[in-house]
Image (cartoon, rainbow, N blue to C red):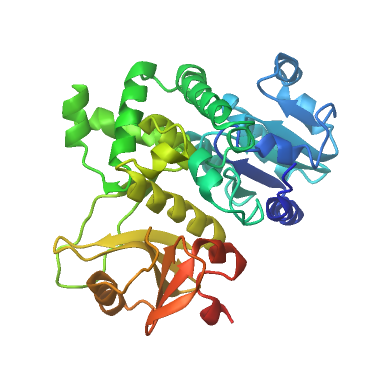
Length: 385
């Protein structure tokens, strides 16, 4: 059993502040397991909206929820968006003695509906699969290969993990997305998602996948947004600096879970990963997700110019700008792009995250940081101190 202490504490703190807390994240990432740390599944205050019995109990939601006290958990809330107005009424009712923890597996429509209905009454937390920090900073090879989904990472073998991820993708496309109201053929979405795996780490260009799939560019953008809303894809937006250079304006695309990326690329084990042509892009995406989870920046971007200068991450935190480069090399070096980014973006520091074991300076304000140090000491340990 992996204890997710930081996530549990974040939920406790949010429930102490807010009458309604929404925990969102991809399916099978551990939301329900965390919720059961607060409330037993057989409690009268626990509603699983994939359970017909819970759905029947909520046939008259105001009556069912209005008399409850203490914490109320509603799982898979995206299946019943009509509950949000009911939650708003109950949250505003002076005599209501409950608090709500609602769990959702889709971000786009769920957040739009809840933010409109529950504005000022709700706090939102996002959960992903296991991070290296939650696993105790082990050697990252297994985590990188299998990804962070609990049942994929904890599988008895690489073959079992691969089978779980294959079934996860199939279930998401054939069952979950249609239940959430997505009207797109599962086969078309699978082909598009597989194509995105080969664009992993590159800037988005709707024209190329549209031609390959024989659909319009607007259709590929819709497919991209569907997978983004399901937490399968990250669209990393570009940072625009006030410099006299042509800057890239399209987002960068990443498959958020490295295990799903490898499944889509046909990578079955570590040996195949080490020899695959996308290994560099896979490492970059893996580090990006770990850095964002560990650093918890206020905003995150990438930066690139048409002249070739770029930096993988630009992080804004507490009003300051930092840069992060992801390098899969034993001995990272200072590059012209790093110098340009420091000067043009006025970055305070750049951390070059690499798979080694020693932390060392590359130049003034540029430091090589081992991946395990991202969680142990922090990206910018000297600045934080």
